[in-house]
Length: 241
Image (cartoon, rainbow, N blue to C red; front, top):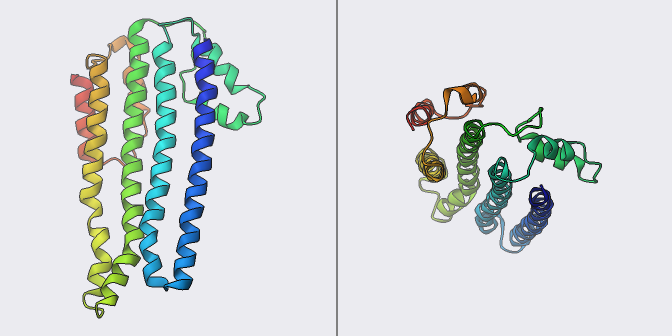
């Protein structure tokens, strides 16, 4: 229990540090873009927009990585230590801390464990399988949004580059970054899928026990934003191990 509590406070500190560094970095890029716009003009300043978007995506990804590491470690301690997940979850759900909303949202993702008993190993495994699959779907949605954001940020710079060369193919050059979004999304989704497969291998690949409740949890997952082809591939791999 002590390790999980210490890890939670460390996670909160890491998230706050990431937020501060990210906010400072974004403000620095924004200030540089404003100065460049006044000194060099709008066209050169537009080249900083991809950097601004990339920095935003990077720090959001770091925050997600911190949250993943926390939940993955807490679930790995469940059943392997003195951690009572129900008590641990309720403690932080009701904690009267200045950051109580952040703590509550952090703990809300954990299994309720309302009876405060350690469930059988197959059920704990099903919770971890559900968590990793939920993270996979979130990663795919995040990467799809990030690809579109970065491509949109590249449009002004692409159009400015075409305009500086006499305006030939102006609109074609403007649309070029957006045309790269579908293949970029597919590549990023495949990278997320590969990471998910490696995580599965840590548990020897899983075929969840029918009595573990995993099928019901899987049905409750949010599959929105996931292409049907990927949905079918993920579901097949879950059921076949």
